[in-house]
Length: 226
Figure 1 (cartoon, helix red, strand yellow):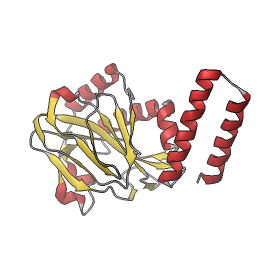
Figure 2 (spheres, helix red, strand yellow):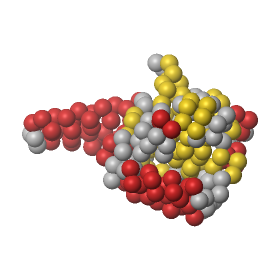
Figure 3 (spheres, one colour):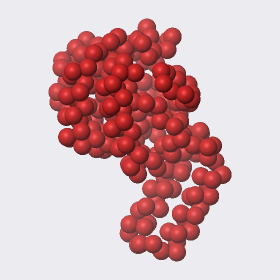
């Protein structure tokens, strides 16, 4: 299940992130790569324990905390602190699968990577190439969203970043451990929650909406790991 979450960051917040990142020190992106993906990775990153990374990560986490679509789709238990990368002309990231478990400096618990997220910080017209290509059961999904928008997708997916042909592609990326481990179950819950919201929007707080909401929460109670 690939989900677009629009306007996680406002235009003003994107401008602020860009301003902070422009003044930050960039290092080789291989520092966070696994054994297999290290050979395929050619990009730059902000050090995970840097002041810039912490400041901007907190902004993103605050915004996600109040984003109903993200909460419904991810049912988050833990969110790995956001990281920041940059692909200049000629840079790319070959096909890979993200590590199953992540840990890092200042992180006291390990995070099982059920979901991957990419939050775009560059307008698509400002760079060529650089599409995030995600493989799923329906083929390849090519993602290049507006600045401030985010894509959420299963971390089990093979994916890659196409070579940037001109300009520079800046993003934040991170992982989510869901309360519901199984992706198909999580997708069913998301569809049910979306349908309930549609019923409530069209007909108000009817008896049917209340009963469906109860079914939803009882299913989450049955399947959630907390």
